[in-house]
Structures are given as C-alpha cells and as structure tokens.
Length: 167
Image (cartoon, rainbow, N blue to C red; front, side, top):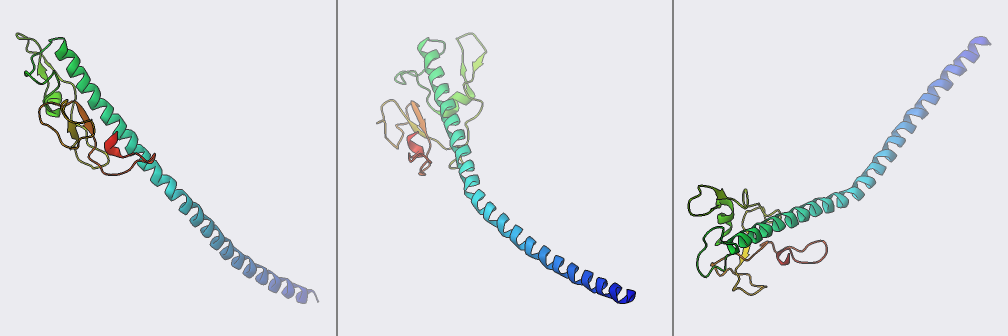
C-alpha cells in the first residue's frame, strides 16, 4: 500500500510539472505580446523626440548665425573695421563671419564671429538660404551683396505646422 501511494505521488508530480511548463510558455507568449504592444506605442514617441531635437538644434543654429550677423553690423557701425561701400555694414557672406575681419588699420588682430558654419540639421548640409537687405522678406533668392538674414533651405514642416524655411 505504501508503494502504491508513492507511485501515485510520482505521477502526480510529473503531471504537475508538465502543467507548469505549459503555463510558463503561455506566460512567455503573453509577456512578449505585452512588450510588443508597449514598444509599438513607444516608437512614435521616440520619432517625435528626434524631430524635436533637430528642431531645437535648428533654432539654436539660426539664432547663433543671426547673432553673429548682428554683432558684425554693430561693430561695423561703430567703425571698428572697414566694410565695402553699399553693404550697409552687413557681412558679404557667411564665410566672412568665420574667417574674421581685421580690427583697425595697424592691428594684427582678427575678430571672428563664428567658429564654423553650422550644418542644417534638417538638410544635413552647411548650405543655408541667405537674404540681403535689398531682398524681399520672403524671398528665396539672394541678391549676393550682403547677408541680412539666414534661413533653412528645408522644405519640411515643423511639428507646430510652420515651414522650417520661415524660421
């Protein structure tokens, strides 16, 4: 009798382990499906995060270049260095802001306004749209005389619905 109970316990344990193994597989399938649902929800959030970072970088780059143009203009208006006649004291191009200008007639000092021309995060190139003082405010072509304004050449639309080229 004692051996018979022992056999019953052994087969019962075997059955219990086989149910537990099947339950683990079911739990694994449920866990994987939950992870897939959560990851599919997180993917759009990640995409928007990347776009927001690029937009913030574009804002920063535009502000940096516009500030450099304004500093150039202010110092030229104060006659700290010589500018071309008819330029209205604006830089002739963005390269001038990087190369710098000679301060005074006898000084060997150069004043640089930008370290480098930043890369447009939307287009991936250091190619920016320029406007001169004689161009229309919404012009997409540059007169070539002086740099009054800088804008992105991207044709994309921002998350807030505005065009990147209008920033």
